[in-house]
Amino acid sequence: MKKTTLILLIALLIFVQPSFAQTDAKRIQKDIEYLSHDKLQGRYPGTKQELVAAKYIIQSFKKSGIAPKGTDGFLQAFPLKSSSNPHASDSDMTNVGTAHNVIGYLDNQAKYTIVIGAHYDHLGLGLAGNSLDPNPKNKIHNGADDNASGTAGVMELARIFSQNNYTENVNFLFICFSAEEEGLLGSKYFTNNPTINLNSITCMLNMDMIGRLNDSTKKIVLSGVGTSPMFGNILSNVVSNIGYKADSAGMGPSDHASFYLKDIPVLHFYTGTHYDYHKPSDDANKINSQGEVAVIDFVASIAKQIAKYPEKLSFSQTKNNISTGTSTFKVTLGVIPDYAFDGDGLRLDGVSEGKPASKAGLKTGDIIVKMGPLAIHNIQDYMKGLGMFSKGETVSISILRGKEPLNIAVTF
Ligand SMILES: [Zn+2]
Image 1 (tube, rainbow, N blue to C red):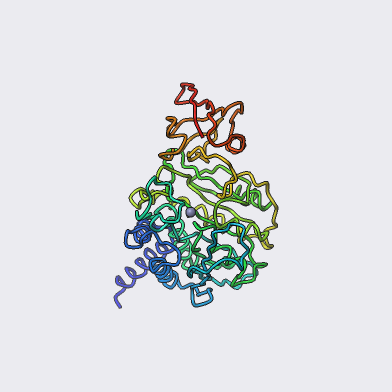
Image 2: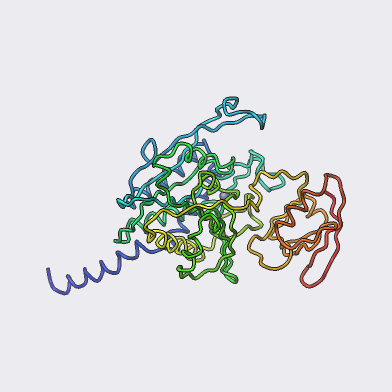
């Protein structure tokens, strides 16, 4: 071999190898485009298209060289159950199909394991009643942000940690959950039927909706920071291009809640809600893939800091201050709160058509400061407010639209 060729080859190796272990916006965009393509029909659990998505994830895990850790290769099948009676016990439920988690393992011969997860299912054709479209039936809900974005994050982190030529002092379990949208079914099944010892899990990092980073604020919502006393120190050691609004709660409307309920410290990464949330318009062309790179790098840096701890992270219980999705309120306003808003009041990130808020003329960007007699300083006040009113009641809501204060009568 000629010397120049050899130098060229070495240069090429140095140049090419690290790039595979680096977060790549183009690859993320490609993964999200595939998973949220119309062909996958909204990745509804228990369908043929769910398995097409699962196969794509498996291919990516195989390419990264991580080991299968399901019950049938990378897959972990679980029954989808349904009952018309919400108080039915588990044995009263009828089996309506089989869904699949996808699980891969990077064994670094360490004592403890970090779970990195995201759900890959979505609303399918909008037949299950959890769409926010006024006429959702038979419309494909592509779920690019919710949650092809998080799924791409899991695949990307599996690549990074298996190809970075460095052995972290922790193992990684990468899980893409199914049937999250049906009530966290995949993560519940996994935590009740784990394929590794649950006691060896030091924490769970959940990415659910990480594809819409706001380029002007560069801020995400980080939930679960109160679930371990070590998180404060860990987060202060992380250097990142993005900021976050911290929420201490371990309970939340996504898969990390299933791990929190098993006394495992959790963090949930979330770039915030938007108008297309749970609508057929949650498409790949609206993804901020460069922004997602920053979020994934943030997750990776946190995982590296956790890996430096010789002991398992200790667990703390937190106050449950954010709705868990299944609301117990008698009324709904039909708005999407801006969880990342730091100011006084509740800023609206979206208004659902046909619901009380939109009928009364509330708009995206409005800040609710009062509901009836109750001053609204934050999302907790708003939740309290929703519990105070009954269906059919008309309530005066005070808002700020820009700098202009307005009073709007809303009928629930
Ligand atoms: Zn989701």
